[in-house]
Length: 539
Image (cartoon, rainbow, N blue to C red):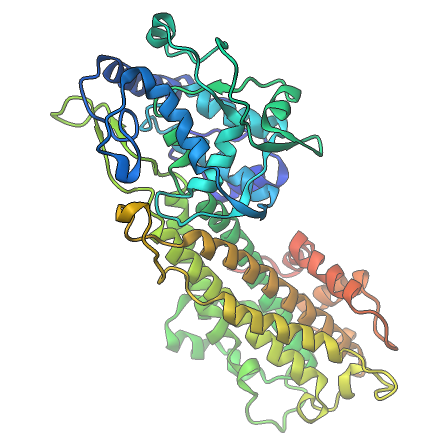
């Protein structure tokens, strides 16, 4: 069971909750106490109406100079959810929504947002009981965070505030109902059924929370969509790059490449950690191979063979950097304003700032997409080479014996080329764009949510190209005399895994099921696990 405290959430934990349904523990008493302290102080300040606090007793954005009466603070908190629930497009995948909910609960657990423990605990219980809000994929500028996506989650758990009375104001409990709800609860799925948010919560046995001051702002301000995509993306990128090395190794053997290019001395001379890592992995995968160096008359191989470490290594270095930055970000307080109770030499206070601004995630997501796009470009060149007799070193055209009548894997390369070209457009950086909004109060925005969507598409495209290379290289090896028996220690296992999913191509058939089967082999991690059992994981 995952425990959250605002400081220690890992990418692995996030993936296990988002994808595998790992349960999340209720907040500890220590975490709850810190949250109650800041929330009660904020409530008292609002009730005394003694300070102006942005978004708590003021309007939002350019309306920040409009003071709101204390008696309307709860209504204001609800209104920001209503106002921001303006997203459009297809629903975000469940795993991203669950990642968003976990990140928001973890951020609130830091105790700097001025909300009750029950807000974070309700998000946790929604995760544990399978309530998945419906979040449209478009509408966020990544500026005041991901306002629209997060509002569609907040709508499911945050109900209209109670009618004003002294008892409720004093307790800040948020329980019970004193008047008709405004009816807005968004949509959510529960047990496979699309319901209103209110109905989904009721089916799951969860009560929606009545809005208190700052609740709506704390739930909508933040970078949860960007960071959820980024954290899942880093995990996916690491897996894809591992498989990219394996697929490259299979192609190297299918093309009887020269081993000299992977000699340790060359890569030590370069001084790049990712490059050294990839070269070492290739040597491990290819150990005992009888296909490498089988065409000794060659002097050098083409770049797509010879320069695999120099191309894949930098991608590894970028992803390693992103893992560090994104891990820090999913443990950050990113709403505004923040409540500080224990600043040295200061009384408790709120401080307005811009931790919700998504320029960091926008840059990171752009970097992620660019870093993983190139390995697919190089893989596609190897696929083309394997299919072309003038380049393949004696393999039949299109990797089918009766070429002409049969076209073999010709159009699989077309698909790979189309995906690589798609990535060239998707990898255009979103972080360099900005359109001012909110009466020029938000005069610079990150467009990080667009970067998140594009990075996810790139990752999916790259995984499919790697799947096509695995399928193509396996077919090519089968066409070499005693090919499978001459493979290296690691590539022999990879070849077997592919053949367990896809039989060799003897005559033309529909290729889509084959590509999808190998894509699933990569996505599931089954192939990587089998290879690691044979040669050990990459160092």
